[in-house]
Length: 126
Image 1: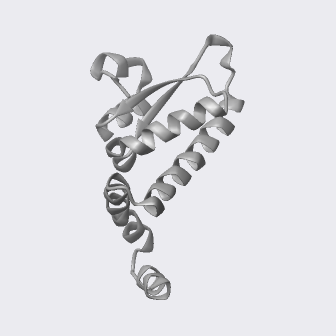
Image 2: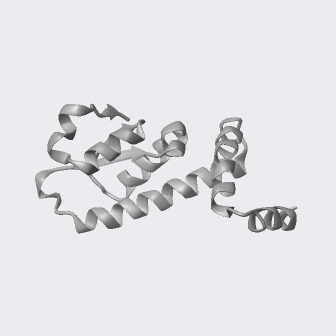
C-alpha cells in the first residue's frame, strides 16, 4: 500500500538511496508497458528538461547549440528517459548537442581540467 511504501522509505536510514534503488525497477516496468511507470519516467524527463532549459537561459547561446552531457547511472541506462528528455528539450526550444557520458571518471576529468580533458577521453553520441 501507499502507507506501507511511505513508511518503508522514510524509516530507512538512507531514504534517498533507497528511492534511487527503485529507479531500475521503474524503468524495467515501463519497458514492459506499465502506464504508471512510463508516466514516472516521462515526468522525470520533463523535470530534467525544465532544469536544462532554465540553465540554458543563463548561457549565451550565440555560439550555437550548448553542449549537454547526459550522465548518471539511471539516465545512461534508460533509453526512454533519454528520448523523452531530448523531446522535451525540443519543445522548450533548447538547442543542444547531447553527449552520453557513460563513465563517471570522464566527467571528473572534464571538470578537473577542461584544457586536457579532450585528449584524455572521447564523448559518445546519445
